[in-house]
Image (spheres, one colour):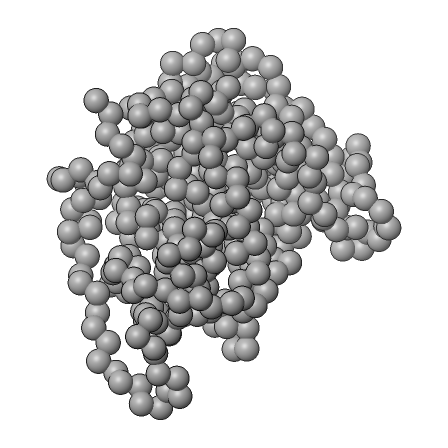
Length: 456
């Protein structure tokens, strides 16, 4: 019988052993007498890698209204943006109508910039590659995609220019895989990210519409990603390509790199990930404990597809949940390292611990840069209109892509950093130790006192 994806990690597993090594939460004995504010009995203290901050929860626990939330590092705009999305999500709780959601999202193309060029392209699938029980007809056809480039010197009033040729000179290329739980979104819904990646990385970005679940389950999205990557190899050397993505797309990007490694195909220069979804079994604590901050639902309700034996659209059944190409958290290092990896994750997102364990335990020898952003939620980079630190993250994202495609020394570097959400001090960045990350994984697991009302 399949186990629930929300159950704790099975005893004796590598992740369970990792959790057993975690230290108890540190006790803060600093009375901090200089602090003007004294926490009320209904406040609780949230440990921070930069010291303790005091937060007052935001909603009477007895009310049934959508939960409003706040983090000590959030300014008013962040509170409005996060809580606005949380309220909309709460109002649509219940069975998911994928057809309706897709129809609405298909009409939404977020604004880009007048310097953006978009070139539609059709990518043939690799009919000579069959992954994990695929049949031949599933390897046929073509993938809709687009090249996204940014030219700061291009000035035009109006919508994005659709071009049949690219006039900018970029030697670096990025394969971008959009998020959406493997069931939603497209290259168009994510243009607000892809154009900024193109700008900050000074690269051409190939965004693809991989096949979506539940109509197309694993491994079809992976096959499309592999087809797109090998398509790029026709004109661009592997050491000038980076595979990138957000959320489910970030998990797919990492799965693609793992598949290339295991099948001895030349790997890209790097892999760049925003809030990667790499554990579809939801086996780590933050998935539950960060729900009071994050934008993600705890589960999807769809009685036509989801059941006790199938907890996600992307898989046929729960026996696939710990397949490394579905949940890269369960992959292992080999004698062949993956290319340098960038992981950007928010302190307050449900998927946080997946990234922390992957970076510090499962792939602790691989060249890797883990960036934890204080107080941030899932794929906060998409909220750059409201959240200033989002632009900082996107600039660092682009910088990583430039470095791995230009600097061979990146292939031996490991860096774990904390980015403080403090605009007044320039969003300071500092290196953190693994012990601090292990302590962070304990934050939020303690019982929370009954909250009080606190406006935005």
